[in-house]
Length: 172
Image (cartoon, rainbow, N blue to C red):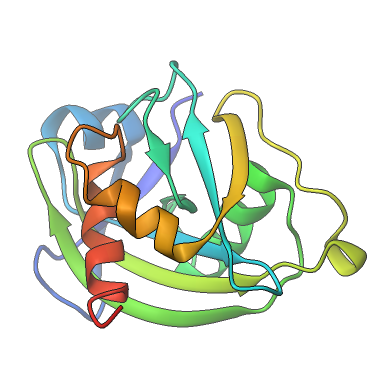
């Protein structure tokens, strides 16, 4: 099924919706849209990192530190972030803390990024459960190890995730 995605006013940080388009058209024409990214941390501040499946429509088989995706037509970005965290990692009900909002652009994506952080407690949210069509594998990683891996341009990590982490960890 081709999801209907909210199109955003390109460059506008307020998130003004200007229309809608099928996801396939958004990808093919690199249309400006909204997307969410949720960084999941545990009680010891480790970051949950995962490897995307080979069937993902953008950046397949690459590593990522965010659960996230496009904001659908009629959907609020916070709702979208909650939906994506529950869909991709099976974590529902964790409070979201807003971290950043900025435009990300490359040859594959053009979106207003809504970046959040959530704290994971297995006693409250149960085990992490990967969405099999999106997440191939996942594990907890110390922030220092993640930063060291990100310093290697050969490590297959999603470019938009690298950009977000650069902004988040600039002082680290």
